[in-house]
Image: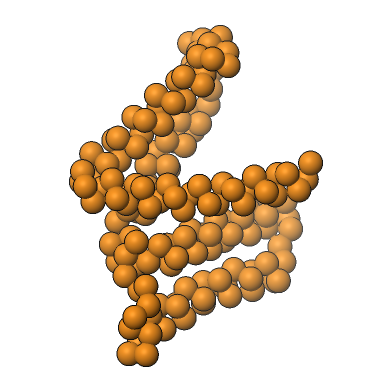
Length: 155
């Protein structure tokens, strides 16, 4: 079962890259505000359909009223992440954007591990630093005269 969840995490990463590309193209064709709105409207409709078929009792108003206020920040964080993503893809490649997303997630995980679980490893921190250095190195290779044919631009 453990390996199935590892595989699902891998698949999720691939879906994330496809989603980034689609969101970037949507904002190119529709503008940032409309592209973002379409993304969230479609996701909301699909979520509502799943909810209706899996258990409409979950829509009870009391459930929403009893939830802590900060649970509603997930949508705000998702929106901010998507806006940052589609804006950054005009200046950096999909590879660089995806790698920095991973670096950001890993930095957050290392910090949370250290603060919440009191588990910090120099090896983990070094791994994150190597990933970040790889993005800088890739950018330098892609913008140097020898690497000018690389993919240093947007998606």
